[in-house]
Image (cartoon, rainbow over the protein chains, first blue to last red):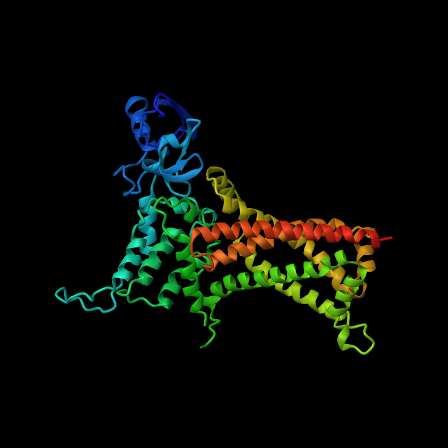
Length: 243
Length: 223
């Protein structure tokens, strides 16, 4: 049992709102409890040692995607990371790179996701412009529904964006989350957009043809979404519009 | 079916041509190394390979046409140029991009990103060394053979180009083929990807060993 260990947290601290604040790493120590996650430890730290510590959370169950941060070099969800995973008891926490920093470990993923959704038009574009609310929807093949549901599991935590070196080098790159969502609508039989329409938004070097297949998205996604396969699928789809 | 070359399709063509030119160059590279390694079987074997590559079986006097090798060198230069022109667009060219990459790699621990960085670094080295190799071979194709090549490599000091070129090109090609396979969806699941990654490493090691052995095998013929 890991009870009784003292954990050492090295936490990135910086408040951009404070004029004279400079980025620094601050060390905290805390007694480990059974089943402790990084998220639980952060709450305890804030409660007992430093009320100014900033980090995001909502659901504490890996569903809201708010508590993503870089834990010992791997971007992931704090609420799904057990402290027992680290035999040395040393844990370094950094905010997700590539997003606007709100303060300490808190980043503005929401702003990024919203801009992305608007830019790529990440919503269903129905085939018909029939707006009669009484019209029955066409039934969907259960297999298709299952495929779409698989991609709908994305919680917009921002891990894939942070883990992508391409995105860090090219700010306008859509990242895996954008391509995952585009693939989701591309596969949806109710969506009226054609391959040409999708080419228009991601058939460029900020989209699927800029992806260098470094696969940081695939290797770090806390929901284990099939980024590698989806991006390859989109690339083939978009390449097929060339002929 | 019509081929669409309109401006808005260029990024698609560029990405595709990077993959296709890369695969062609890798296939050529490995074939080329296997042919050169005929020196391991002795001078006669290599002479036969060199003669056959010059299409000796088509000429009456059996000497073949050395300029065929020059043509191949030019074709490789063209392919490599296409590959470079497209690949350069993906490299971090500005200081800001290099800083961003450095910061990201310091913060986040990711193996495949490090692999790609090696590919980028080896790519730049190849860009410097390959023209030398192509020029030496393309401008004097008639000297290719156990004695001519040995003289070039060991007496004229060209091993200083060939040795680093061998290491960088074998790393670059194997990583590239691995990434191109993932890029277009050849790995359906993560286990396949793991296997491909292992195969890629084995391929690099085997070809580097063959290459080093071949370079050393030229030594006895040099003086």
